[in-house]
Image 1 (tube, helix red, strand yellow):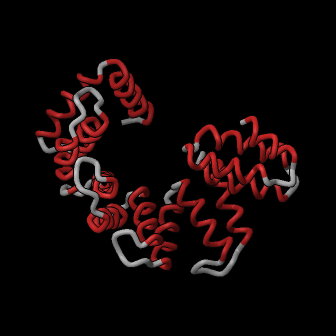
Image 2: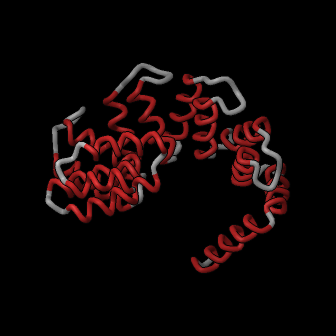
Image 3: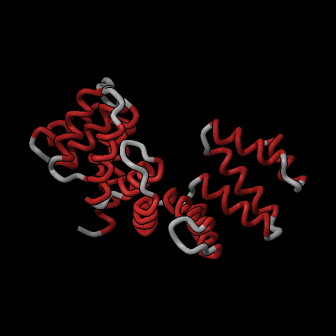
Length: 238
């Protein structure tokens, strides 16, 4: 199948998802019942979010489990999120860590990133920053924008590796270009140090638009203390 054909089918699916989500749900459910792991993942996500059906956490968990046991790495990662966040089940950090590790070892970049986080924070397992560095690196190599930012911190501060400011800056730039709000803030900090204030302000405005409220408030507090008036003004107006 040509790339154009694949793109066309994806566009058609996304159009149906927007216009006839219940039809998509019915189709995926039939394919899931027939044993297709991709459809099991899709229908699980629809139950999780209530797209084309009533939100049903028990059904979401059921189908994520089916897909995961067939080797679907994204479903393994989603099981980790379910148990970490307590979506329809009691919070269980230990089980979340197990599923994140499975997802990481099966090649999911999100699994690698999430597993690195639980290793770094000791959530559900003994902290292991060396292993966290390894998995942040694996996720960054796979193109994961958030992982690039956190890996940059390891190089900036010399955690588990020799300090390498140039490498840290490169990772922050790559993370920002891929759209991660933390990466944008870190790369904006680098640009500020280099005197490129206008570029830094543009990045920070973009980060503020994308970041959750708790992060935005902390960022504004930092900007209010800046020695650059443009950044202080940004804290008040963005």
